[in-house]
Length: 328
Ligand SMILES: Nc1ncnc2c1ncn2[C@@H]1O[C@H](COP(=O)(O)OP(=O)(O)OP(=O)(O)O)[C@@H](O)[C@H]1O
Ligand SMILES: [Mg+2]
Image 1: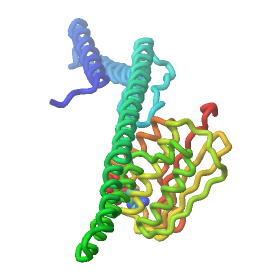
Image 2: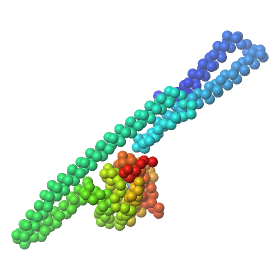
Image 3: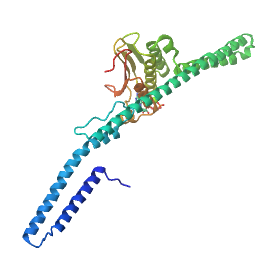
Image 4: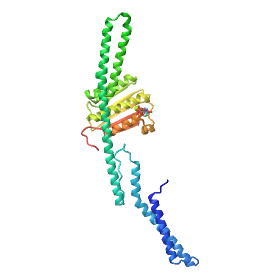
């Protein structure tokens, strides 16, 4: 069912009331339209009705404008872009002001609850990844190492006709160990815990280049950016997803990852490729990778921008506030 706007309803009721009142008044005054003075009086009445309705329309629209503006703000609120608030309007009535304040309060609560629960989910996910990575590394990898050693020992005493088969099995066990370690590293980069963000990123970029055969460079203007543990993890994961996207979608010939502002209040991390570029609607609508990047950036209070690289390709830029830096 189509609903009529409140303003239209009020205007319609007012129009009816004015017309009905004037009609009743003209009946009561026994207005006679057959003579000239009666017709003149009637015209004056019609002009008065029109003037009243116009004035009523003008005043009502002005009174309803703050409500309209509040509705527009409510319609465009997006919790993934925090900080949008309904602004006070000139001539705002008290009840609209109350509604606006209640709406802003509700937004603040929603934003903080959303951020709290999303951070908890992310932390739980990272803890689970770390546990699985540890199990892969400590248990499955140890078991494969033992198999490999046993194979080596068996090969020493085995008849020569089994030598080739045993060597091949050993090679496969070695390959499985390498893949397992790679998987564990992707799940939870121990370099991040052991050596810090920059060495972990450097290793990530080097392994990316080796794996995909795309020349990949890494540069930083310092050694230890002043970032908290959560922010470092966010940077690492954003770079990981950006590199994975380059490998899968970009057809790039060169990749560069830079970390600038290591000693400053804002650390800027860029992942630059010279590939086919990313269509703007994909930036907006993205798959779960781009959405995940945005979500992480949001939770770390960072700014994520995905822009075309000059000369072709895509640049993913993450700007994170350093620890202790005041928000602007
Ligand atoms: N560096 C890039 N160059 C070109 N296209 C890109 C690049 N990064 C992303 N895209 C495009 O944006 C789309 C969305 O990327 P997104 O990471 O969100 O999803 P995905 O990589 O397709 O899947 P997943 O959820 O596994 O990450 C991709 O399908 C791809 O078309
Ligand atoms: Mg992706």
